[in-house]
Image (cartoon, rainbow, N blue to C red; front, side, top):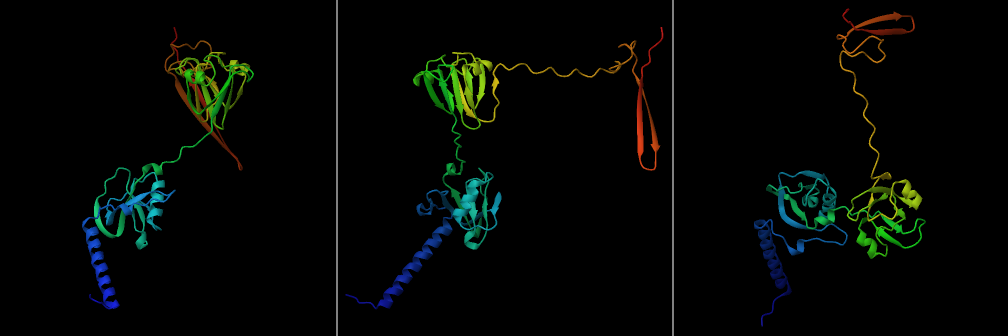
Length: 298
């Protein structure tokens, strides 16, 4: 049995760790794009990312997100929030440097850079803005005064089958309630979101209110409950006002011409005179335009 002095054991251990460090450094240098399972970073609620290449940079970087990066995680958060950035980004926080990114779909033109590490966001869905919940809903009644059979529907599309599945018969709605700030509903006369239609903004509508908006009683067969700024209007809106009449063509007498001037007049001539009167305090300019139209004598 060989007995070693504790100092000798420690020296052997340090030499072993040194050899391991050299091996890992060589491995990283020869496989700069190697991904380690332990390199994937995911903290609950944080943007997940992974190391793509250590000591490598892209000479075609698209944008400097910040000139002073606090950490790779902070850089990932900034990149994720920037619509001009794709999933690839570079971080130099370990050298007190910047955070930069490539554009979506941009290919990196790689070059050595010991001050830079390249990462990739592994879950692009985490960068998508959360869908807003507008809490839009609509209650329909088969009586005109919010009584009788009723059903409630959230934001979305409602068919005639949805009516029957929720206890309300097709073509039986006589009053409705639309709820939610900025919410509106479009009611249709056909089950496939066709036919006549009327848009209803947030509020309560009795049978009299619906009839005043050209809704046909007991004839609603589908709905669209949506969010947005839309004024209540009928699907059969009146035609737009006619456009103003075009200006008269050259040769026609201007509006208010004296009697006797007709369309067969020759092209008009225009004479402009201008007089200026100067006083010690004010200057008044008067411009008069006289239009004369010549007509051949018989």
